[in-house]
Length: 256
Image 1 (cartoon, one colour):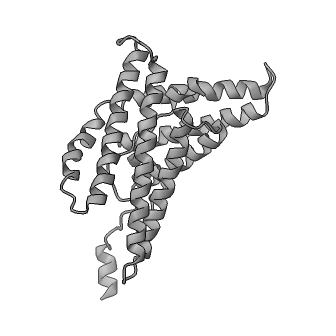
Image 2 (cartoon, rainbow, N blue to C red; image 1 turned 45 degrees about the vertical axis):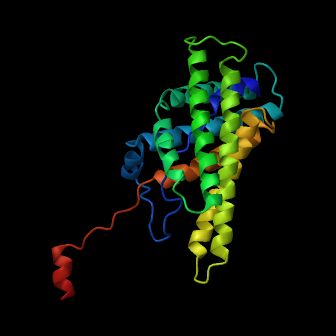
Image 3 (cartoon, helix red, strand yellow; image 1 turned 180 degrees about the vertical axis):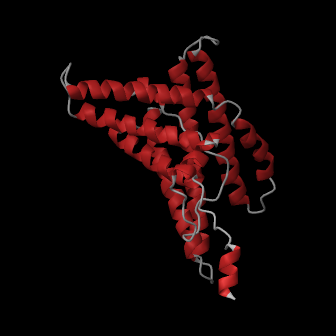
């Protein structure tokens, strides 16, 4: 709904590998989780996972049409509050994330393949446009800028349309890359699987942003589940891997 759109913006993390080799196991210990949370991007994706989980709870609770004062109605209200507060906290820490995107735009012009260049340029420009419009909407919410014809929420929804387009273009880029790998002579199965995962994630984000921008509304339950899935993928990409311990001196002696 229009009132919810301002609470669920997702900013992509800086470029990183889309997958890890299967032999690289994640460090699922408490130390591994602490290491994840020492990174700003890691904390952001964990917060986003819970933000969209709460959105899913709001959506599923609304489908049940709970009566005022019931336990389900209370759960829906608490989930909505948590969703809103997490979104506000995340938005506060998004400022200046557009700088790396803006710096990468001139590099797009050096791409030799003209199709790849246009796709990359459209994706980066639309992403940067979204980020800057989102900042304007944020300042309107703070009453620093006047609302004008678009309130803070309306401005944020406008930015989300650009973000939706950016992810759609990113999906096309992954699809093109997959087709190119499919015609390769050597085995590219791992790279093709990475393309499929990335394309799937971008499609889910298109679904989320289309709903939040009012471009095409689906349902909070569906958007919440989709957001939790994409957030989980981002969390796993940020999670530290187990470090192989070097063999002890005693083990080396026994091996001789």
